[in-house]
Length: 322
Image (tube, rainbow, N blue to C red; front, side, top):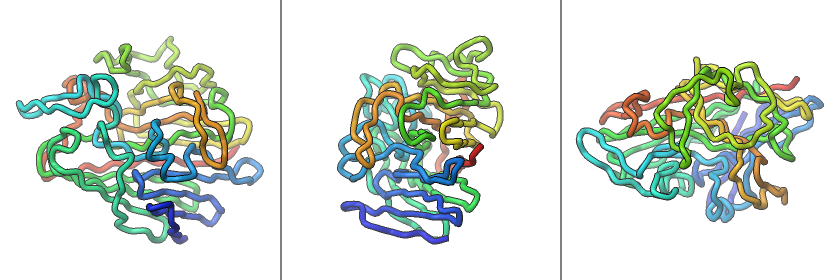
């Protein structure tokens, strides 16, 4: 396997192709996944993630399509938190709250550390005080495509001051490659979820999914496109997504404690790749991560990265057919 590099406007696009003809495209603009081409049950390749044709569309559009998200994925209430007795004021970009790190990483150019064999590794340095967060932070994100059609995402981060960290990827998946995702079948390996308030911030409760619309433990059609909630995972097996039309199946594994299932209900109408029209529920996100608003919720698992320590994480999206 090898990595091919091509121009993407002022940026670079890297394409990894495996022995089965599956492809993964990533760009140094936002360390973004632009496309994932996987076979259907008849062996026909199709793009299973949403994206754009040009860098300009990524730079001007909301939604974080395929982007690396940081410093802190999801929401932080009041755009502030305290750490070590010091209050930090953050960039507020969703009302009075911080979403996905504020200005964040999604429109920034990452350095390319390596692009060889089956992997591309990007790096970004965010200075002390970036979006209000403490610490000179260096982040590395690696994307790998295996010959077994596994897309692996590796995260690493180091800081020189105590800080908080929550990194994820914001791919919108549609295993049909067209239409909406409401007919997809989803299994989430979570016995609990985090209820939210009107601003989609967690209330602090951890509630069982039993007997609620949040119970995906046995797998079922999504049907309702309102979901934008964090699920508390039972173990490293995260989720299974399947599409009867194409036969494509995607399994998700992670070492993170939660997954944000977002059904794309707030995705506004827009033009995507190859002239395709995107809109509400055109794709769904399974964002493996720490819990939202953890910096303000001591009852949640810690999201603190201490000075001199290394944060590492891995998520695997495995594709198959049935």
